[in-house]
Length: 170
Image (cartoon, rainbow, N blue to C red):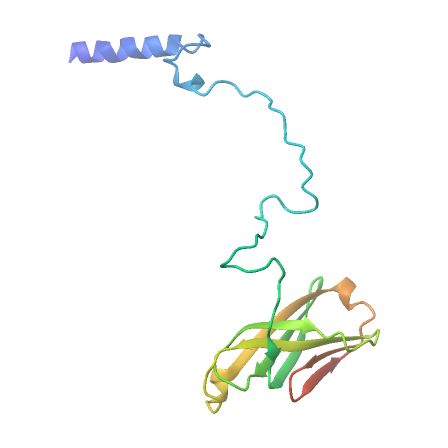
């Protein structure tokens, strides 16, 4: 036991003595060396976030353009606007004409040109499914956050589907 204790003590003293030696490979504190400045790449990255990968054309993923081929939801059943600090959330519930709607979006409606009205269309992609199923299987919900600056001067919000539209006024 005396021999193993003395070996541990000697090893501890030797490794502690290596702390003063900068170039010693025995000291685990300087295995990676000191930090040093390196030149930064100055390529023009534009306004893109370097942490988000750029979209690329490929056979699998298609074009860079974000084309959305959604169809209008059949009816809009509910529209509510909930005030939150800094803005409001538009909550929309609709019922599609077929079962299995997915990727639901509130898309701005360019046909409404009134300055104090925000107009949206509720669109969804449809899978091939049966038409006559219970309404809860066809129900879709979407939400959209608007800031106070976007709501400034707006008197009403309108959301339209294929057969109806709902309006919420201030």
